[in-house]
Amino acid sequence: MTKAIFPGTFDPITKGHLDIVERGSEIFEHVYVSVYESSEKKTLFNINERVEMFELSTQHLDNISVSPYKGLTVDFAKKVGAKAIIRGLRIGQDFEYERGMALVNREINNRIETVCLISTLPNQFISSSRVKEIAQLGGEFNSFVPEKIYQQAKIKLKGAN
Ligand code: COA
Image 1 (cartoon, helix red, strand yellow):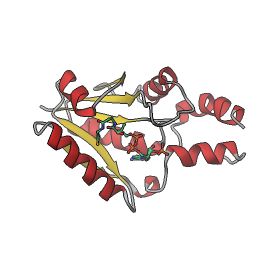
Image 2 (cartoon, rainbow, N blue to C red):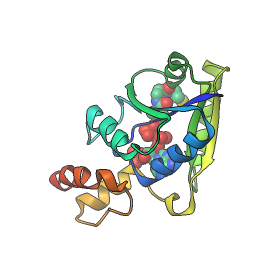
Image 3 (spheres, rainbow, N blue to C red):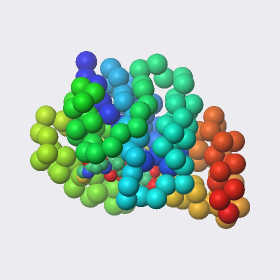
């Protein structure tokens, strides 16, 4: 069976990401959640916090592991022996963006396929930036993030006011 990576910044993990990784873990033998140590995106949560929050949220899944990575996503996939990159597709422009990224990744390494899963309806409009914005403006965000990380996220998000 095939292994896959699920890359992203996850600043922080949302229920949308959880939806995709849970479904990916049903399809693939092992899913390596790959947390990008982004240089271009300024993150609120540091790399250790982002990894830890993903680990906490996915304790119920036994065929996934979470680790940070730098550099090209396809290179990381190759390094861990994954043949696929899982991506989630929400409404709107995700398709165009993902299509471009899949084509570039394929150009760099044509042995690694991109597999897109359509986000479930309640997760179509969530993004990490929206969660941060709602929380920092004093709104309730518990329906957008996994229950297990809510308290940890709340401390940092409210503190960032
Ligand atoms: N549910 C909820 N939210 C989702 C989602 C889903 N299924 N899929 C994506 N999102 C959100 C993310 O949280 C993110 O929100 P934000 O912009 O508010 O932080 C946004 O949609 C964009 O997501 P994504 O495209 O996954 O961006 P990312 O920054 O999380 O990850 C990388 C992008 C790291 C995968 C990509 O930049 C990359 O591969 N970089 C490595 C360098 C490289 O290889 N470059 C060549 C590739 S073209």
